[in-house]
Length: 500
Length: 118
Image (cartoon, rainbow over all chains, first blue to last red; front, top):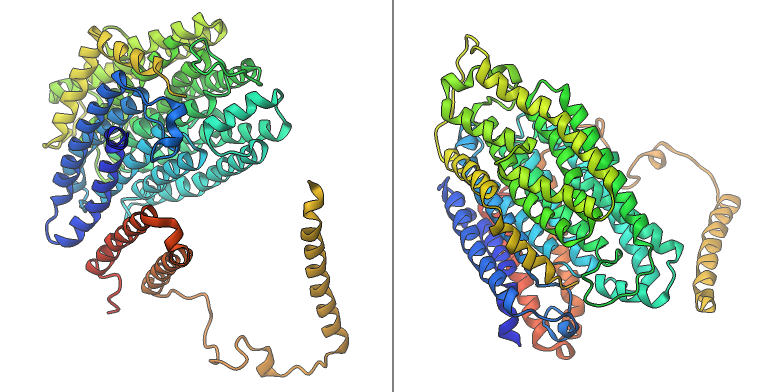
């Protein structure tokens, strides 16, 4: 049983090893500026291979949950298809970000190896979140991810905006963590267990939810909606994403959001009954209440995000608001709570990762000093000066809007269809209206690039590895948009073999 | 079940009471002779010079944080050492991993010159 189990933990072990040893490598080769870059790329590559291996294995040989006490992790971690699936998403997001970072950091005179080890540490945190089966493990993962993000957001320590972003993110994030931890404490107090599944079993045993448990779950939802930047707690997102180094914003708003979302799925999943429940838990909550709350959060998030993005002049800030809106779309998958919804979350997480990282990387190529060349008017006539980049940016924008044949459309289709299937038609209507609003500013940028004359100053584009990121991202968006069945089949298998 | 908490409540009340009694007793019985030395920040220490709101080197902060870090390490090791035989090999491996992790940080700290004072 032991060796059998190790192949599933291997991705987490590998990423922890590489993130820790990256620090030592940096310390040993002090003079070598780019060793962190190569080392972290190699580390992520090896991790993604082992994650793919465990994903393939997870589909044929699952570790049943009732055996989990005999495993060496003692049921603290869960190994199933969906966690391996998200491991792969996080690693690929990391690889794309690292490729785009090198030239950007060199230009901003901030290429130091700590950047790469912090990135690896945050990925380690996300992977722990995706595997968590215990509230404390979940908390460790969330904190490992968040603390790395606080430092990365303030990485340009001589840039006032970046420092402001780091400090704001840290103060508000620490506050939200307080909510999260207090919610966990109350759940522990009510159920006597910090194991997510054991808490679920307890709940089904009592038959009626005590008030203290409801408060605990509510606090957890508050803390997690802060981390995904959902409506009442989204105010930090624009400032942080605008101030943070651009490639970091791209990484935080995709992988970080997906990790917080999967944490939300893990928490809410035992509370809300579905038709694919293997354990036949008798649910004490009327699942509709929680789903209604999440649905309202989701609706408000996408409306607010898209409406405030309308008036933004700064492209980076506009993308920050749009990332708030996309958190709302992703939450619809939880509301729907059916196989289509899980597929939608998985597919949209993949598509959103490619398009959002791609869009942020395009900004990072043109911006100067984290401040200049970031207005929408600066992108006027880009199609004449830089036709290839303009075309890729147009792909990202169309995909973010959800226009076929790009991957963003398929993701939105699955999410919208899933909520209609589960009877939340009003939510689908709100989502469609929000998408229509979002056309204005996404397509506005494309119009500015293609149908306006360039201003006098000519935009300088960086050369370097970021083009690989852009190429991969736009290629993947088109491929997954035309042939979505690969990801859908994969996620279908992953999520239907849920090990909750 | 609630009766289990009676000793705890008793302890809280008792501890609080003792504090209050001592404060009041000191107030009632003690003599009050204020001198300049007694009113100063460190009565029998260094005479304070200038204001406390001054910039000081980040080195102090580094040393303080590193001290706390490695201090906590020892705190974790004490209970492990006491229970070493009962916990067996799993705990030994876990502690080795823990120390290796801290060692990685220690190498980093030394090589980056965080402990170099000048």
